[in-house]
Length: 222
Ligand SMILES: *Cc1c(COP(=O)(O)O)cnc(C)c1O
Image (tube, rainbow, N blue to C red; front, side, top):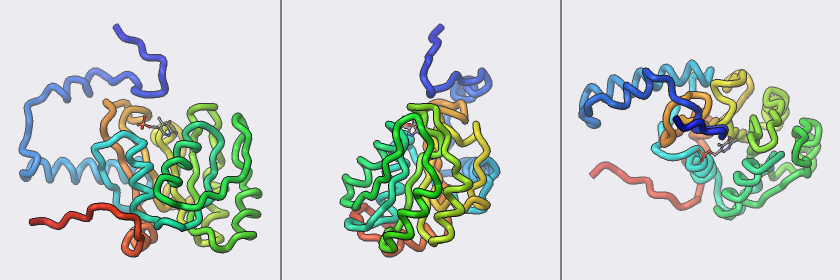
């Protein structure tokens, strides 16, 4: 038996494995529509949110990319709260799409100090969004997302949260803490196979997506 010693994929319980062995249903039929509605309302409970949740057929990294692509435009300034490898990956994605990165120096192994985030935001009113890792898997450090959220809310910026290794494992109150976009993936706290990502999107983030200029395909139905 394979015993993976990685943060994810986590081992799948047997009933999950057996569910994967069921026969197909029509993915454009009413059974799927019922299923997706049940999944959506179940996810809202886990995310502790009333926001819409997008289901993506991607890894967690794909969801991080989606958060950036759909809310921000090239040249926008974004404060990256990174304390490790996954936070740095978020920075790389933001750079790829032409955002201007403001990155306070938090050494690996430490947590992000909310007062530093506050000071950075008060010095630079042109910052449009803050991206933060909730639990930095590479160092095992959990940031105080509630405190970070309260700072970001006071400055009325968009808050994008990588909750890939925290959601379902640690408390995360999406609405109460003011998290605009929260992304996670299936293979960690959810204990199901990799390949699905879930992204909650606040009304403020949906507004931002209507005017953002990063190129992406917005296909209309034929
Ligand atoms: C695992 C992980 C990712 C990457 O997720 P993938 O599904 O492997 O793309 C990103 N951020 C954090 C905090 C993670 O733990």
